[in-house]
Image (cartoon, rainbow, N blue to C red; front, side, top):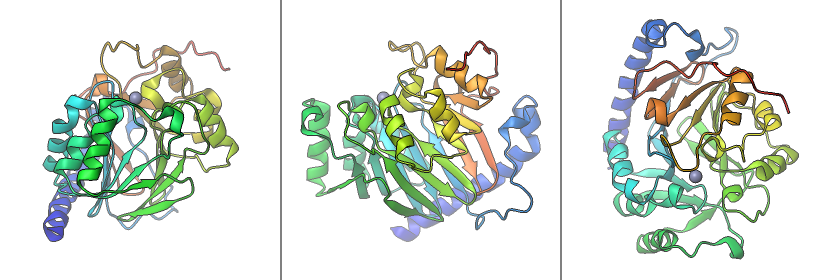
Length: 319
Ligand SMILES: [Zn+2]
């Protein structure tokens, strides 16, 4: 089983390596001549061991589901809405992932844990990570009960997310940064994690809001990252300017559904990203967003071949 998994992932890695070469050759054409889609390492800095880290921001509408893998280790962060479970399972299988080393349910809202019960039933999981929620915000929803029942049925224990913990992910490292406090909203109790690979860092915010960002900054957590999965689908309740400046990313991705009822992402968030000249990708425009890095270079590929969002709105006023 493990050998099979490793072989499949190696094949996927080789395919990605070929595609990374092709993308690097054709990047100027593919991205409409915007070299911002390429990230060059300083020549004096060695890259990682040469293994490829892949991050797939799966298009599940106004919800989150993110697959990360390196060598034969894999991680799923969230699993979309209730009716996304089968699609997420199929996505994992189509990428050769037959079992997961880690699954993180960032927080127990339906757009993050909805499909997780299906994933748990279909895909063996080694370590399942969730925040330790205060009693008063534990949901009473069927979605939450379904998740707990699925964990029970597989005798899968919850590993509490503890800031400061780190876990190996192939050549990369999964670092748990948050939650760093106790909040009265499920969003701000989101697991926040940073994956380090070579000289590159990738930050995943769940739906953490400004109060969680404030405590993260006060905690002196090392927030610097080359890429950020923007918090809470681009809502203005997250991504305050001082926080994004502390992360100082070159790239961002927003998981959001077209014409969603929450009007995510908020114009203020997009204006901030533009103002800070951060290249951002949105799942409602680009579909599933794939990021591949060898620990030095970072390449993006998108399901829908359109150039990255351009800086059309520069009305942002620094706050
Ligand atoms: Zn959400």
